[in-house]
Image (cartoon, rainbow, N blue to C red; front, side, top):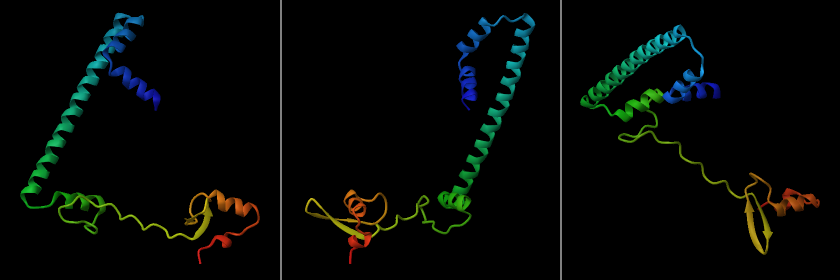
Length: 144
């Protein structure tokens, strides 16, 4: 993908193009072919820009018309994205799923005279790991 990015960076910088053309030993015919190619590219880009602008104007017209009909544009966007209005709250943007509750502690251990708990998820605390290494069982740390 970096090759494409390099090409685009060069195409977007007129000085780089001119430097490239200056350093290349091109015949008059080659320069004319490059010029014609750039004209074709310019025409195609102009067509694409026009098409994009027309599409944007049409979409804006539809959005404006929907607003005059009393349809909530957020509800429409939710319907288009999810195919249903389930989970939609009127007048609000789509809501992210609720966060789950914090896991309850499953194990406890003492460190520096302080009782600390651990859910059993993630990296094993060093105190428990040291105990396991010395022959203890996780059941020795279970909260009862």
